[in-house]
Image (tube, rainbow, N blue to C red; front, side):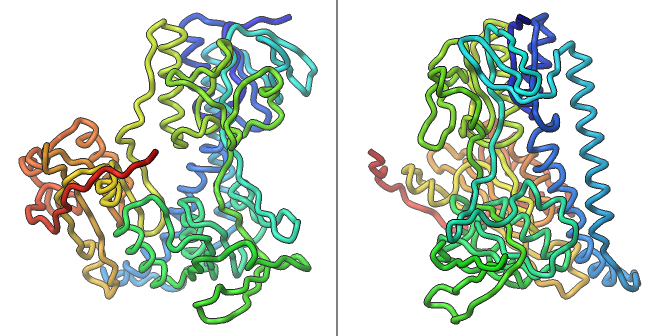
Amino acid sequence: MEKFDYFVIGGGSGGVRFARMAAATGARVGIAEEYRYGGTCVIRGCVPKKLYVYASRFKENFALAESFGWSLGSADFNWATLRDNKEKEITRLEGIYYKLLAGSDVHIFNDRASVSGMNKIKLEGSGQEVEADKVIIATGGWPRPLEVNGQMIGMTSNEIFDLKELPEKLFIYGAGYIALEFASIFNGLGVDVTVGFRGDMILRGFDQQIRERLTEEFTRKNIKLIPKLQLDDLQFKDNKLMIQTPSGMQAAVQEFFSILNATGRVPNTDRLGLEEVGVILDKNKAIQVDKYSKTNLDWVYALGDVTNRMNLTPVAIEEAMCLVDTLCHNKPRPMAYENIATAVFTTPEIGTIGISEDIAQEKGFMVDIYESQFRPMKNTLSDKAFKMYMKLIVDTATDKVIGVHILGPDAGEMIQSVAIAVKAGLTKADFDATMAVHPTAGEEFVTLRQVARSLPKTELKNTG
């Protein structure tokens, strides 16, 4: 029986990073992936999504071009060209992942793997069984199914990139970043988009002003939002979804043939043999791990979305690096989850790091709020009314900037740079002492001087 020091199940960003870095220490490493190397991010997530985001913004850019003197004539969009060029790019990236593994002397198995016993892994396609001192589970997440009238309906983010044709109308169920990013993409490509969700407002957990302003912008773009839409309001018959508008809104029954289920993702732990060997999963089927990514079994570890800690690709990669230090270098290193920046690639974009005003209140901080809203310079020669929004949240006790929130063009790029300052614990005085780069949107962060409002310290809420 073939034996390994480490065997990784799952060929996404986190699994590939661990396999490569562990092999670089001289360990014998195997990795198995049943689909395509690169995982959700590269194959059916971040990378293709960002390419589609770029495609969806050209229409607005063409309109802005006229205000700068360009006459472009008619513009026609071809879905098949975008789809096929996307496939070429992710195939190229997949090849790079494969070459990186092979070049690191990682033993690659193109097969579905599961845990078959203590320190044992079974490769289902070949029937081969191998042994490993440590097994690392890095199988990521999977879209949560949507059930209506006893039927699983709608496509998910796995399939929507590869539609044969661009739909005329699209209904999206969900209000998180995946739902709203696809709403922006297909709206920008000319599709009539409706978004339904169970809550009162989109993007639960984000800063309230960001949520409100994105709602306004979606409305301006004719993306229809239906809040408080429960599963009971949905009916599916004859391959068609019918939506009964909730009470309190204008009564209407809408019909859709194209449906995107974007109600979230669940840990991809089915059929891995984990429960059979005694690995503890939580109620959502996420693998429970300690701060060093170890399960309740000394020989099984897990990282990335399958643990449902913080489901971001860079986080999975850093969890992998921490695990390499812990296992391969005998230098136990836990992952630090504080002050991780993130972006939502809607149009307009969102960039955020740290805490919101609501969370500041919940945690008992006394804070000063600095904010600015203005038309991006690119829009000033046109009649486009959109205003960018930027906010700093400052802890008055320490003067540290503990929250930054951006809505507008290039928010993702800006938050990456600002994240360094927040992670380093810099103060508002440090921001003020930094010279502005003019004219840029980012200079607002170092020129804000007027406190918009102050929030008093509150009693900590009892979370027990």
